[in-house]
Length: 174
Image 1: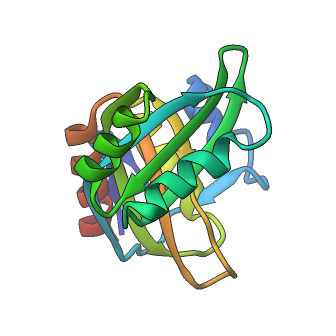
Image 2: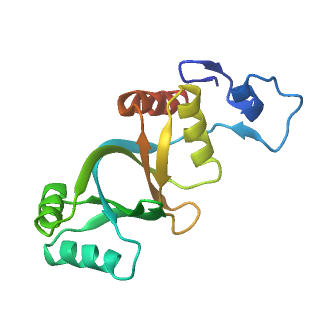
């Protein structure tokens, strides 16, 4: 079985190939691609910059909850500029309206979500295929209860349509 993502690759390759160096021998850094059953879609993500202080996350969460907006995925991180509350909601327009009404600045962007069963090497396989296609990943967040359970992986990538094509090629090649 050959695995191709716009480049000629065999099912297993060494990470040094990404840097243009041929592998010296098989090693623990060799990645084996395997059949992947996954569902992907473009979803709307909302981002709010918040102060990194107690109560900010609770404030946004409560506003959304009281407005009957369900948070389906969330990532909260800090940076020099403050905190970043990124989330996917069941009703993104309602979520944005509620937050804007309360004075929050809301950034709306498209992200790629992938639903798959978790197993060792899945993230490596997906991210290596995107790297081979020169697709930069700005960030990723996900959650898994246990190995083998369903995962929702959220990726912010430069070129969503090309990333989707790569994922579809991975499924066909599997």
